[in-house]
Length: 223
Picture 1 (tube, rainbow, N blue to C red):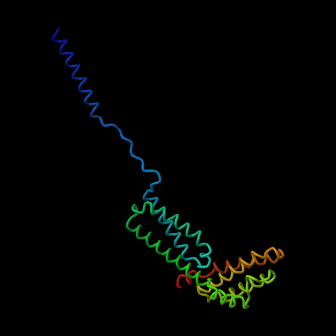
Picture 2 (cartoon, rainbow, N blue to C red; picture 1 turned 180 degrees about the vertical axis):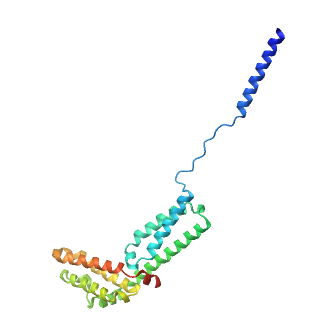
Picture 3 (spheres, rainbow, N blue to C red; picture 1 turned 90 degrees about the horizontal axis):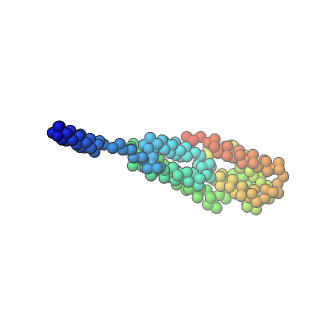
């Protein structure tokens, strides 16, 4: 009887030890680590690159004078999009990195070209010469009377209507410089004009932008 009781105790102790060892060997479940907040996925980064490429293509194919007036805003948008991709550029494929570099270079060359054209068109001698040619008159726009402005706007737009097919990018830049002078003077004296004349000027400003945008993109890209 004593032997049987001792045997039972030993057996129970062995079972307890085996249970404890088994519990220690059972691996604990682990929770997968989450990606840091703000980290772009590969698929998301590729979408960003595709959007960036489409955006650059749209800008470099624009008529230069139209885009140049918007250049500060366009530059801000370029910086925003490129910073987003720069943060995770190492995650791009080899082809993706090549595409990204190509598009950045295209944009930078285009933006430099806009700056050069703008600077050339706004040199006083060049602007004065373009003004005489486009307005058919030697007039100091900064001193023009309010009543003269509707006719000056009309002359500028009329010349554009007839000659725009033969214009180079430099011609469009010169016309934009003349328009800028007219707009600056108009802002100073607009209150001296009756409503019908202000509406006429607004219509001519709108036609200028329409003619500008209608220029054949292929001609822009060939220059």
